[in-house]
Length: 69
Image (cartoon, rainbow, N blue to C red; front, top):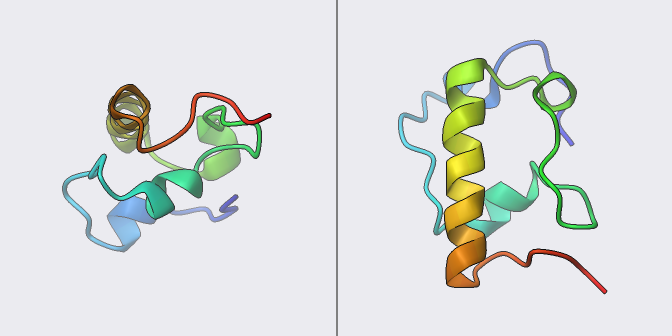
């Protein structure tokens, strides 16, 4: 989990949240496979929406698990 005041994507100047980058997506997920909340990650609203869409796409394609055992 990232606990910063500034958005991770805005600070790194990342325009597109790529659903194929599973290592980056796992930073914003709990060990159980759930998405972390916006206030916990410190991501802005725009990027939180893009992040949730990317995680959902990655789950559908099997790049990121829905849950862990």
